[in-house]
Image (cartoon, rainbow, N blue to C red; front, side, top):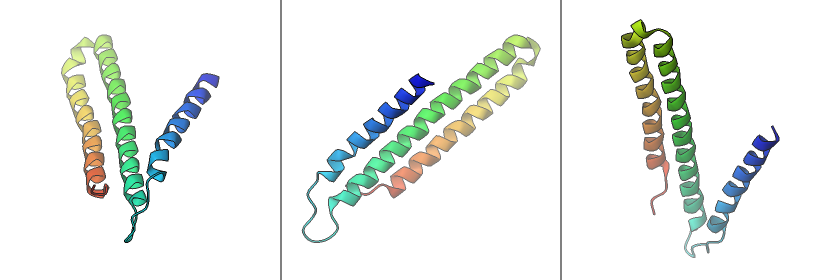
Length: 109
């Protein structure tokens, strides 16, 4: 439990310290500054990173469960393989949707 709290603390510190360059930018003279663009891009990058990381974890768990199921019951290989491919496709589709949303909402440089 203590190790997880340390990891969480270090992760939060990394996110906070990566936002510092966005705050250090000088505002634009004519109107809206670059701060909104920088924070929007930072949020898009962090959101895509979280989605990709959780996708990797999900795909690993699906593949592990499929391997375990095939090892326990080799005669069900075809059914497990079909369910595995469908599950992996759905997980990957969620990440692709996240990428599309990030690309549509990310500020243009």
